[in-house]
Length: 213
Image 1: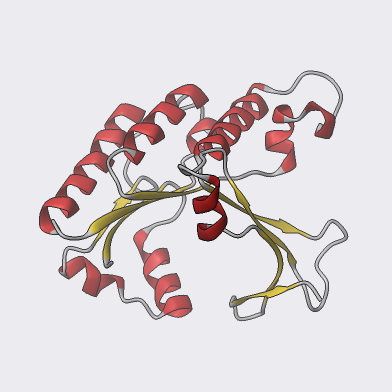
Image 2: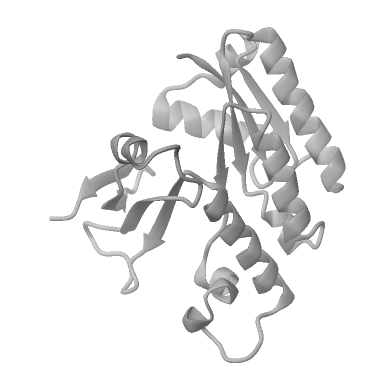
């Protein structure tokens, strides 16, 4: 079923997304915008730092596309909302509540966040890269990422090789089930297959994904 998309970004502007979507997928954002099938909420350029105000703007964008496309499902894309934690704009608890409320408004939500070991080591003390208590930023980021993984149906993670990029491989892509289970185990098995793949970022920016071996 055709969908309408609300893309919200805290780190990249519309020009970036237009260029990358055209280059990588052949998608013309302008056409979908004219057809009321795409809306972009730019928190990189807009000086709006209050989480409640941001949530209201996103909710309004979703409602606008739903009204313009009553027969289409609205998919919400959240690009790097965790940057708000790094800027001390909000707390992990408040950000989790906001994303949970926004998820209820859309058919599906895709969220990207930084999950580097220094930021999430507080969620797994055995994996901590340093001794002692985690910093407030580490604790907040770990809390947010862990909560999102628990609420997700699918978790996709991209990791560079620990030995550094090789000529024919840049890193490992893992696809696993999240904590939000489907109604039955049978549905989960048929709808989602966990996998561990490899990827290569080429000089032109195109990414190839392939199985091990």
